[in-house]
Image (cartoon, rainbow, N blue to C red; front, side, top):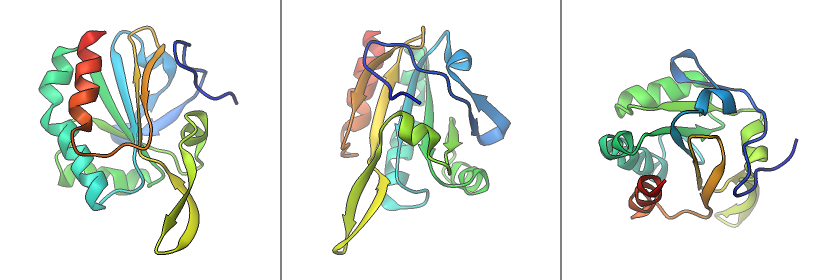
Length: 155
């Protein structure tokens, strides 16, 4: 499987999201799409990021943009996380890291002196034709959603 590239169409993939949603490049056509990768449901930074996207959903909708969050958590955990925080967008479960590898977000991380492979917080903006237009890597949550929204509005 190839890795995504700026200004190129997304390669083929299929993923399962909450509410039994199937996601593929074909299902994303016709709207701009934000796909944001985060390490784990129900952790402080990941919750804040999801809430920030939730709180800006009207602005994203007006910019013809849909949002998908992605982590390695199960669909069941995602459904509970989504319901608890009233996220108006779907969460993709990627336990086998298929999308994580496609978007090259699995990186060596450190926590309390221990090294492990985990998701590097990253966001991708795809236009309505399925072409990757912008990527943010090593994302810091504070102020990030405003940057993504500005780019989505410019498409």
